[in-house]
Length: 456
Ligand code: PEP
Ligand code: CO
Image (cartoon, rainbow, N blue to C red; front, side, top):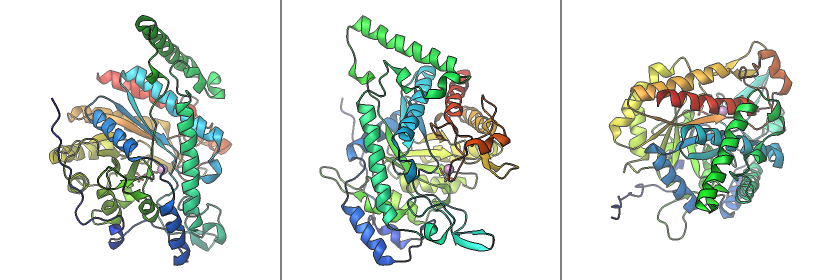
């Protein structure tokens, strides 16, 4: 029987530039309008970074996750930087995401949908337009898409040429990820290819190798009894995501394509709206309502039930499956108070949604020595509570959103190696928020499995 096609109505009164009639928070202020126009005109003629059919394939997989048939893993840097558009950094980030997905696939016994925070995560919201040091005020660093983190006037000037550089770095990252994935880098016959150099010294090495050996054996077993080598085991799907914050950049890559109706944001498969730009009458909601991509909405402790319902109705008026992912980020101390009401609010709209937990952004704090950090124990606590709260509300936590890197950084305290505040200085590299390092990320995946199993 053919499934009845549900009509999706194109957004009324929407144009790729209709957001410009609204108030846009968190935008850069450029000092030369002509220079900006010139860069945007070039960007608008550049090739897209992703395709509409990939976007629609992702939407279908998110619909499956909404139906409880897939687990959503989203992770990567808080802020990508141009200087780290390097082969080893990209490959290591891919490896840690693949290893985490293997742990989840094995432990949850369901396919994992992998979405990287990469190939475009270059714009950051900031709490203030200006940063003041020793009486000197300069524009805040807003991500490499806009300016540079050094505290000098030249570095902090929003530079339109960076829009083109961000596109180029995103394209190079995408190109390398696609080549690795298509070339068998993610081959399930050889999970050992993904090992990072220092995994063998990790307290988690034995557990990880037990999982990867067991998968290798299962793959060989299936091939032996079926006499076939399923091609699908050699490659996996990888999707990209970023916060679609800088609306001129997003507009330049929002396009129509042949043989599809409507508009697609071809800068990424999965854009999300950050917590600070989700106002109902703001420019970001206007921009998002007209694109056909699936999308994330960050849901923080400041969001009311009625606000969330309005967002869902505006962004998914036809209750289309696979369109909305709600990413809650409350903080370990607040999730218990805030989440249940929001789960009920989302249910009452009738829209399918996928709830995932970002246990990072509500748990940021300043260490005594001044470093911005997050405690592994708080991240774990928020995530574990989220599983319980969803279960108690008759809902389901369908994924996680983590800030992580494949490098051996020391930015979050705690974890199997019990990093403490003194250790933070050893290798603190992030330009914005502290990330889980490779080992902490793998441990988090193992904890998700343990928690999920305890509920099953
Ligand atoms: C982020 O994901 O890096 C971010 C800024 O998140 P939020 O909007 O949830 O604060
Ligand atoms: Co962040």
